Length: 242
Image 1 (tube, rainbow, N blue to C red):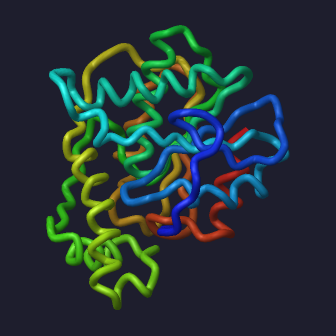
Image 2 (cartoon, rainbow, N blue to C red):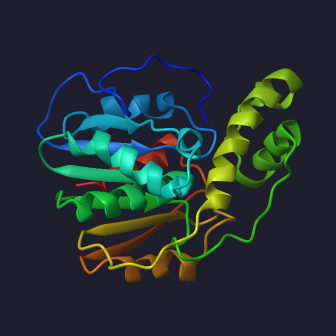
C-alpha cells in the first residue's frame, strides 16, 4: 500500500500517469485505503502498451441523496471513463474489483465497448466476504497488516499516522460492506480473474464464480503470493492484461 498523495492530473474522475499516449487505455481501480500513486509504477511498466489512468471517483461522494451509493458511483465513474477514445481495459483489485465491474456494467449499458476486464483479490461480486475488521482506525490498520500484509512499517509504529490511514481504509471497507449485487444480464466482455495462492480472502470457488458474470472468454489465474502482489508478481499480472 502506498500512502503518499499525488496531485490530480488528466480530467475529473481520472488520474493519468503515462508519459506516452498509446491508443489503448488501462483504467485502474483502487483497493480500500489505496491512493492513485499505488499505480504510478505501472506507467513505466506497461506504458508502452497503454495510457495508464486511475479511477478516482470517491464512493463517499456518492452516498448523498436517495439513489444507492453504488449506482451513483458507477454512473459518475462511467461518465469519466466513457470520454476515453480507443480500446479500453479495466483493472481492479479487491474493492477495486467491484468498482471496475460495476463501471463496466454501466459502460456496457451505454454501449461503450470494453476490450478486457481484469479483476484480482476479490471473490465474485454476488458473494459476500465472511471476514470482518474492527471499526477503530488504528486497530483496523494492525488487523489489515496481519491479514493482508502490505502496510508500511512506519504506520504500525505511529498511531497518529495509523489513525489517518485507517480512517481512509475504513471508508473503503464501508463502501465494500454497502455493496449488494443487483441481478442483471452478464457482461459480454473478456474477463480475467486473478488471485494470490496465499490470499486469505479469496477461494478457488469464489474466483471461478466470476465466470457467470460474462458471456465472453473467461480466464482464471492463481499467482504466487498473498493479497497484494510483489513487483515480480505484478509483472506476471501485467502479462495477463493484453
